[in-house]
Amino acid sequence: MSAQEGQILVGQKSVMNYVLATVIQFHQGAKRVVIKARGRAISKAVDTAEIVRTRFLKDQVDIADVKIDSEVVGEPGKQRTVSTIEIVLEKKEE
Amino acid sequence: MSAQEGQILVGQKSVMNYVLATVIQFHQGAKRVVIKARGRAISKAVDTAEIVRTRFLKDQVDIADVKIDSEVVGEPGKQRTVSTIEIVLEKKEE
Image 1 (cartoon, rainbow over the protein chains, first blue to last red):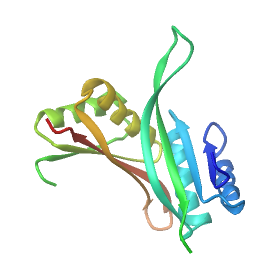
Image 2 (cartoon, helix red, strand yellow):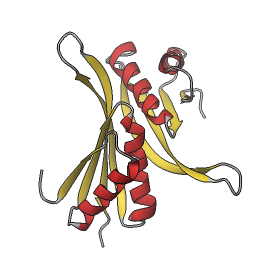
Image 3 (tube, rainbow over the protein chains, first blue to last red):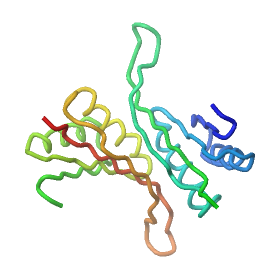
Image 4 (spheres, chains in turn yellow, red):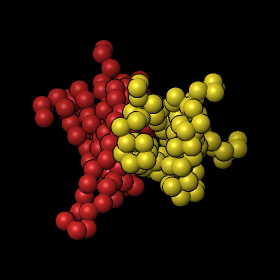
């Protein structure tokens, strides 16, 4: 991961935690921040990206890409498949 | 909406309802099915797309596009912004 690219893993905390963590990464010079989540946190990852894009960094960042996929998690014998999302926020050219 | 394109709105029912509704649309001849959701149902929409892609129609459909956005809902005075997702599943060329 280059210093120009940040990463946020969305989990159980409130959405504003992840919003602020994303904003901080852009303020520290990141050109792109990848917001990742699995399972039920996926909705929160989308909220995080949208709140950053429409409010905190309005007109300053774009959604460059959204990818969904599946991942197998858990110990052998207790494995299950969960959905994943990766949302790439990118600073607009000035 | 052309007869070749189906649409599934993911809401409060269990994920398997939406999986089967999607599979049925492909079996009825749809080339593309757009899976849409808002708010908390977004995670379920991603699950729907992934279960169709990796299990029910494995190797038969691709995720052609994923878009996220925001929408204002509710009556005047009680309006709030919700995140939305649109996932486009597309039949692979044979």
